[in-house]
Image (cartoon, rainbow, N blue to C red; front, side):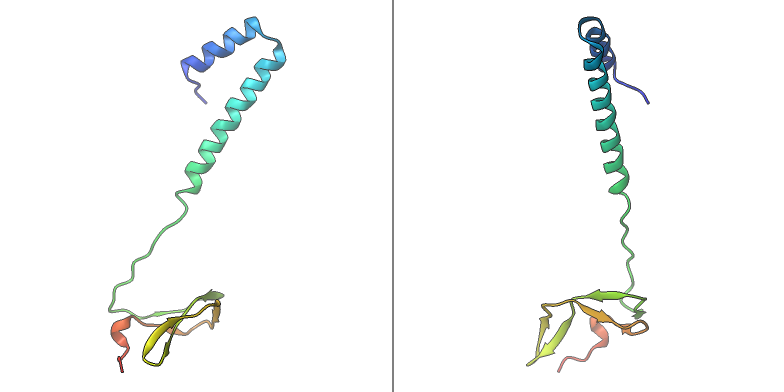
Length: 100
């Protein structure tokens, strides 16, 4: 791990002027900040999006749940609760559904 020159200089100055406990505290703080920055960097790269073309229906995988739209009096209404969707059901794009 590389430290910046200013951090190294401040640690060396503190080593000369302060007690050993203060140097240890600064070192642990610097290492903690470095680990948190690295963890945040890795955590933000874990999501991905898969784009599916309009022309291909898909099937539901295991343990899928979420809010769904239902047709009520000719209007699409989003459900308040999450619904468990059975594995194997087809999901089709809006172009496959006939509007009434």
